[in-house]
Image (cartoon, rainbow, N blue to C red; front, side, top):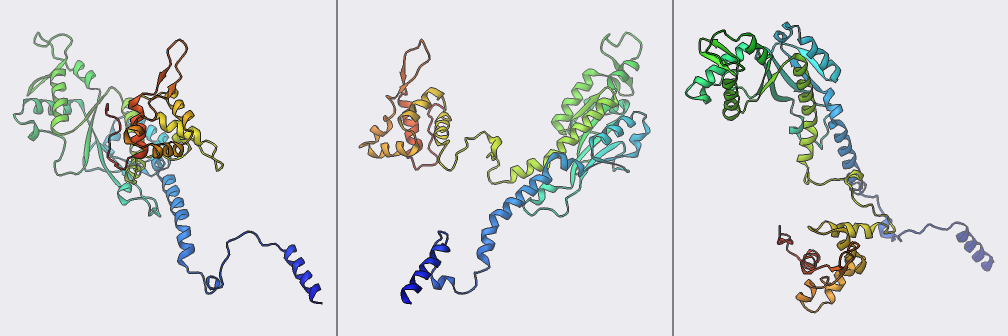
Length: 369
């Protein structure tokens, strides 16, 4: 009976084989599993999901739908403003007609997503972009030009802006050139080909306009958009709105610890499989990243030492530092047809050696850079 029982137990073990797992002692199996262990295991996955969700919300095409262009009603008094309204409607963002602190101006604002991902810094979702586009009539702009160019202190005579306002103003003038030509006074005092307008401040033409543009840029960091039609203005407003839609994504990338690093398949790196396929190509590409190293020189190193580990072992086997630095100097490099074969050389040999052996993170490998 005992023998039969033993055989039955053995058969039971053969019929129900346990999968290969780590052995767990009785003491490890006792008691409930601490809650923080699975939570800690889930943290990387949750962080990745949060990052993916944040990037999805920050994509420019989605961010564009959360932008609003606030248009002052005074702008709509011009018949050409319908072109601007149609362009904004076709862009996909929201535009609102409401009075602005400055008449004839446009202002941009952003709606924060709800809920807002915790992985995105608050400054990324700045609701007020502080960007204002002020539309000026040609005559009004020329009056400011005369004030700027004839004033003794340009920094104190910049019109159109309020120093206390946090907004970053931009100016736009439609049809300035046509206005100058149509209002050119008759007489011998105006040079042909250089239109000007005569007012209380004197003659104001393109030379004064160009001087004023320089003063505005230098003293007030104020840029002026001179366009010939509402169509050109609408194209500029749409392009500026698209740029603002990309701003949160750029802020988010800059806020990362290593914003200069690229990730993903599009980064152009070599894919390495679990079985090691691709390691040789990755090693070849690593050598190719050194300055003044072509594919032939990289292939010479990889052919002699197929992996970084083998090269490191060769350095360990060297008896002196000079021998390490010159280890690769005499490696033959295949030359194109018709040219003499050459060797790797002492400079690249020294750089590769220092790259794999130094413990100084601030060491300059390339003396020629």
